[in-house]
Length: 262
Ligand SMILES: O=C(O)CCC(=O)C(=O)O
Image (cartoon, rainbow, N blue to C red; front, side, top):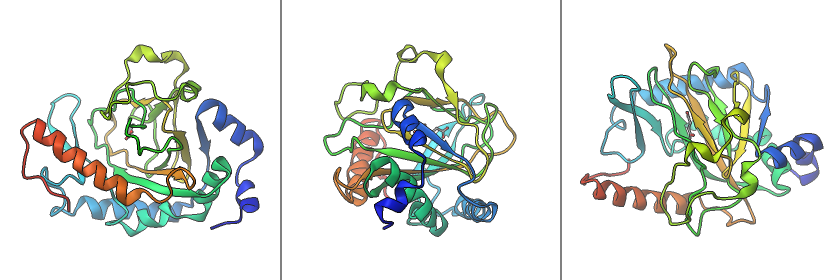
């Protein structure tokens, strides 16, 4: 891991201060076009893994088409165990340095997912990523790595600055909660319009949402989430065991059984 002094240089003090105040940060041109092209090619390869893309496989997440209502594949969660390029990004020293500058200590990977958001896919309602499980790290930070340029048209993520300072805004009952739209002042939303190579970081307490993809191409983004080392250490395996057990229970509540993880 990079020495703390080197990592501290990864962000200017004003950038760290802005992150603390707003709960998000955009960093432009962190990765090269070649690196993002390798990620795009891996996304194509993964999408072709028809043996994995199965409604019974809890690695896969699904999203309705905004107009037709058709349920379509949207996301692999987790992804670094099937995608070596995704794994390369998850452990990239430039990213680790940004996180270390924010945490003032080493980050640990907690979660990783690749969202494809095909044309027509519904967006995500307003929510915070933090889940009210006692094990869930308060230091949770997500890094978005866009593969495709993001815009209002293709459903870029929109963050609401400052609200992260209020912590978790839903009951900490272990359930996933959306936030009522009136939780935030809609006029303060910042659309994360990014090009390939840019990254955005935001806190697990930062309310965010996204619109439908009204473009003609997929809007693919790699999401890598971390915790500070002192906030639970390496928890990725434990998190996925807990998350998958929770998913199996949730599916059973809706009458869906026989699911598996592959
Ligand atoms: O990819 C998007 O459009 C938003 C995803 C999101 O908010 C999430 O996964 O928490």
